[in-house]
Length: 280
Ligand code: NAD
Image (cartoon, rainbow, N blue to C red; front, side):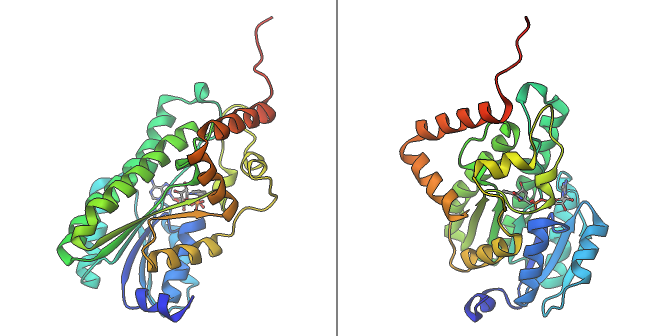
């Protein structure tokens, strides 16, 4: 991390939701390393505590229990941070889950759960943090969407639904927030090496293999590298972060030729699942 980036974060305050694992843990670590005080907020308090326990600073790491589906709790955490730090400079709405598999197998309960965490969780973060940032005349909201929020991903249909919404929310708000001096960035990686890749799916969902084969790679992106990318992108106020490079190129191709991406995805799902079993 260069000094220029460090200057952008040193002495500032941040909330990272889903900070107890994966990308959120890497963000917490990268931010405290450049002198930012980070409230590492996770539904799993013990995980958040483990993350902050190992941090050398110079920024403070503060573990907090937070369920992003609880709007009052999100509001309370933002209020607490503002009263402790004087301001909230960065709101990383990062907590999320995935449920892979064929859409007809998803229960409504599963649909509601992923919408509550991945979309409403981000809405709660924006709703709580944005007015403080407007009042301060500065601040940066960083929402973790996904490459599946830019390119429709079959077998991740519920996930893609929520992540398209987060990408749309982020870009729309960015345009609106600029006049208040508030910035918005959306993070859109493809597979990153975190426990989410081993999340349970429904039916015959191939799991981790699905994510890696799609990119013709055996190794997912490193969360620490992504955290470095995110801080650099935030420092230069980039609207999007789409990584790795091949995903960025795929996205650009998809914008020019959406039919190509659609055909590729359809073929890929056939390869992964085979033809549907029909009654004989
Ligand atoms: P992860 O499973 O390692 O971490 C997610 C964290 O969110 C966990 O610590 C979990 O306890 C927490 N969490 C879950 N529900 C919560 C809730 N209701 N309130 C607060 N915290 C909650 O996964 P990750 O890969 O680090 O995911 C972080 C974000 O990155 C997610 O939004 C995910 O969709 C997105 N993302 C991940 C990948 C990937 O391949 N890993 C790719 C693109 C986008």
